[in-house]
Image (cartoon, rainbow, N blue to C red; front, side, top):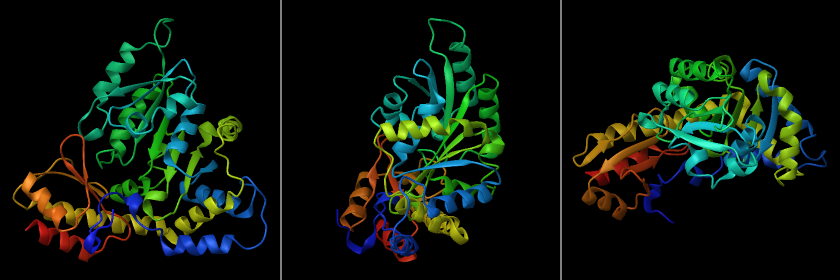
Amino acid sequence: MRLIGGMNFLSDTTAPAHPAILDALTHANQGFASSYGADPVSAGVKTQLCEIFETDLEVVFTVSGTASNALALSVLCPPDAMVLCHDEAHIHRDERGAPEFFTRGAKLLPLAGSHAKIAPEALSDALKQWPSDFVHATPPAVLSLSQLNESGCAYTLDELESLIGLAKARDLNIHMDGARFSNALVSLGCTPAEMTWKAGVDILSLGATKNGAMASEAVILFPSARDRLPQLLANQKRAGLMLPKMRYVSAQMAAWLKDDLWLDLARTANAAAKRLSEGLSAVDGAELVHPTHGNEVFIRLEDALAARLREAGAGFYSWPDGSARFVASWCTTDADISALLDAAG
């Protein structure tokens, strides 16, 4: 879809790769390097991540968030157990059964909560209803949290503590879908460690693709899950997801993390979304549906307003709940926002 005037708010996956990412790929393309992640670039990214997250960890690189989530869950949830997630979670709504496929049959139990955040009472009720010691019931094994979540909202550290505390009391493993992790991080103003392993997260799916990379994702195993690395690698290989020339994926991640580029790009996208959210909310015929914590804006538009924006060349998705989703990216400009708001009238 070609959009006039550059008003493309369809998704951050439609944005181009950042020049630093392309430069890193060119640099990685010099000479020969060991295969399947045994190259110096991949080793260097692991060192970067250990420093950023302030702990020893293991990392496995993939090229899609679905692969990262499915591989992570494959080593956290047995086939006869269950993953608890929000009803709007990507693993439930948008991955065509990949988690069930990679876990060899584990059940996903969707939970309720406003703004795509799992409500503590919903999690507590589910844990009561699904025991671990009753042969006829599917035992809960994993709690999966999206950060940012599918409504563009971030769990606060207190909210993470509450949910993860409930889950850990039942010995559940914790998975975090961090496709927009950097956007949540700069929104909360906390450290990567505080939002992950210090809060009890065992495995993080860290996404760079939505925030400036071409195709670069990482499955990060924190100390509590490092021993699962051999099985994760075996699952990755068996699934055909272990790339021979892994240096091209890890090189993107290295450039993305270098000198806090990943945080700078997230701040740019978040700031653009905030301006867009505030501007559209002030327009007659528009009503904000969810708080804007990151780079996504969900807003209900009257039909005439939505048509006017599309006629002006704006691209955005009609969401299943009847709202419109606008997504800002690292390269969204003030001119893009101004043009959209001008069209909105």
